[in-house]
Length: 527
Image (tube, rainbow, N blue to C red):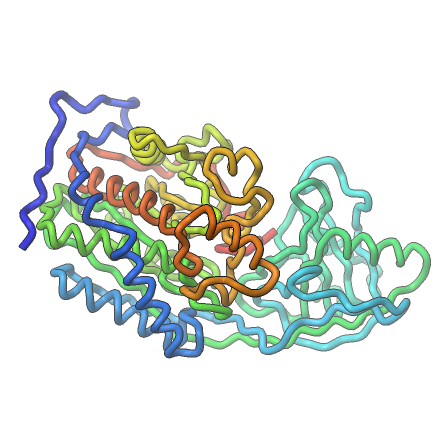
């Protein structure tokens, strides 16, 4: 039996960081024993268990599938055995399923078909259909304006005045949501819609977006700026006909969140740590987000093993249906009364914390880097993480509250939030490679949202050269970077215990400067 965790409190009074309503400093807590107990190797055992679950259930752990149900059973069973109060919160959601690759092919003038996943993506919650029709451009700007969101293409019903019913609409990203553009096109009689990227720096790749439920009336795809520009230029020379096909459906699914909390601690200052438990349909989701789920699971188990008696109640949340648009976490927050929301002192989010080509990203709670600050108290959360990394001689970098993960529902109601992230499909810069190692010019996670986000070493395909370099630089276990996992797990355990033991408030407020939900909906762009 392990000895109880000895909590060494620093001498002195906690420093007040701001005036009334703002965050105050947590009393320093010695978190070393918990950090030593929460190891990358133990976390890896949970990730392997999630891989085994996926292997036994068609290669996926997506919400609404048997693989997710078994993942929830695994987490709930371990937490219940450790003495936590476990609740399984069921809900329904609409799962978007593509049953075949989409098609975007210019038939007149005849051109090679565009490549799905490279030149274009199906919009999540696109309508189904197979149409061959003339293409009509709708209020597009080629070349694009100097600034993002300059284009208002398709944002107003008047943009479609005189639109030939039955044609495919070519619209441009910018200013309003993809859903608005698609619905306006459908209302004007379009048979399908191609939404191409706007064209400024950072807005050239194929758009991987979402329309959000319910399923749209017509097929809708997002393309690169180059595809849209090519079609637009062909239209200047004459008519263009395209074949656009999406084979997809929406199924109503039952799924759940798993919520586990300590028996003791102040309920009116509950500390929450959360991570989404589901994968995408395409794969087992071992980094995204087996890494975050396994990290908070192991943190919870080791806190119980060390007999931590928290000052504040600690609640661990494993979210369902994140990949379909942050549905589980939003359902949870919506289910709380105003009093219950106020009783949550802060929320810590861990979504992808072992990316193979990682950076130590910390959410920009004070808004100093991106101008999008979280509710009051979020700055203190950021500070706890950055001070921890500084104390270990490790660099860290801010990342924006962009709306891509489960913190969004919490900051929307004024709950302070923060957390860690090691990168997804974004590309590591030369400066980041110099600071953190790894491969410049490659994605933080080259297997993001793919079947290769697994425990199997990546040896084949387009990313094999990158993974050979990463394996030479790091200790990789499949798509898990063990160095990243160890460093981020230490930081997660440190922050969780720090806020669990503090007697200082980290008071939230509904006032925040961020409105990231207008850009992202979960892992997909929404405008």
